[in-house]
Image 1 (cartoon, rainbow, N blue to C red):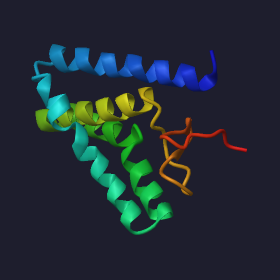
Image 2 (cartoon, rainbow, N blue to C red; image 1 turned 90 degrees about the horizontal axis):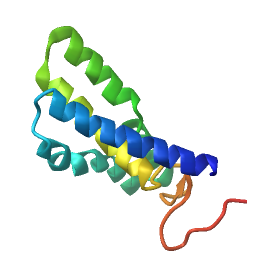
Image 3 (cartoon, one colour; image 1 turned 90 degrees about the vertical axis):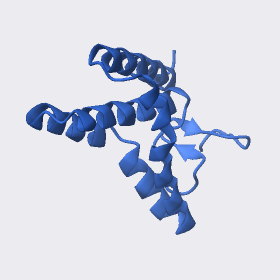
Image 4 (cartoon, rainbow, N blue to C red; image 1 turned 135 degrees about the horizontal axis):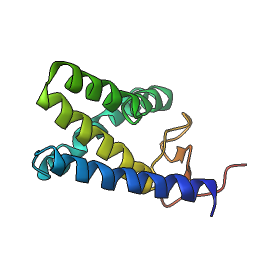
Length: 124
């Protein structure tokens, strides 16, 4: 199994863990789906340039944001922050499980997990 395959499998497990955590904490599961596409608004940075798009996309498609929100949720008992942290982590995990990794900056299709889309090719 390649490193990329392991990373994709690992993120599939994270997505499942987020679903279980969502249910255990008493949130409605459908929030994960309702909020799913909101995080892809970060791709609007590509309207400026590939570099700006990659920076915006990568900032939102990292686990740092959900981790900070989870800490906020735990320290000030803000259930909305907990739900948002779970939905955000779910989005990142599903994207990576499907092969949509962090962007390299030259093209939306070039990610840290390899190339995506119809024109996939192996980086040189």
